[in-house]
Each structure stands twice: as structure tokens, then as C-alpha cells.
Image (cartoon, rainbow, N blue to C red; front, side, top):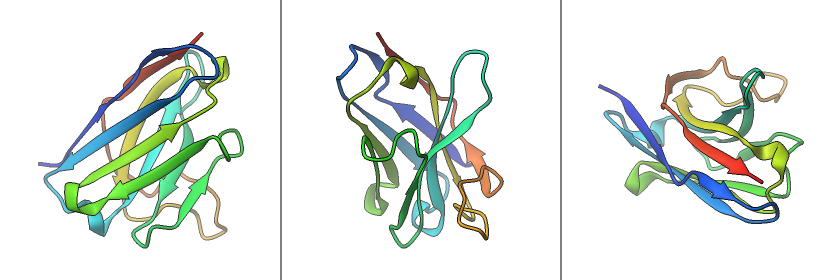
Length: 125
């Protein structure tokens, strides 16, 4: 069955960096859109960044210019490099895989994602 397992979360001071990884198994990740989402305590889950099958990327406004999503199809893995972290980035980060990354209008959406990981906690202080 399909599994997504995140790693790389932890605690970091404001201004620091973390790199998250998500290993996909049970399916060829190269055939899917891959994305990172996050959910802060008491808030709804939001899209952070997605990378399409062709490698094109889309970011939320809140992380544009600070975070970089990438994929390694040979390793069936998606990464999220997070730089210049702030307290507002504190959340559970979850990776996902699915058929499409964005809505027909080009907006980030969760609707196209079928498979979800359990998440890795990122705490910025």
C-alpha cells in the first residue's frame, strides 16, 4: 500500500533552517504531484508548496522566497528546504501525493491530493 513518511522536523531558533524529507513507497512518485502542507495548533491545514510531475513549483505567499520544494524521482522522495524560519512557521508539516497540484485557476489546493503522511513537527522559537 502507499505510504508517505516524513522526517527532518525539530526545534530551531528564528532565522534558522530545516530540511524536511518525505519518502514515498508503494507507488511511483514520478507519476504524481507532490506537496507539503502544514497545520498549526488551532488552525486549519494549509498548503505550503507543491511540485508537479514536470518539476514546476507553486508556493504559498507566506513562504515564497524562503522555502524551496524539490523532488528526486529516483529516490521517490520530496524535500522542503526551509530557510529564514519564523515563529509563524511553527506547525505540523505533512507531505502528500496526488493527481494534480493546483486548481484550474492555478491556485494551491488540497483537493488533488489522495495520499497523506503522518507529519513531522517543526517548532520555531
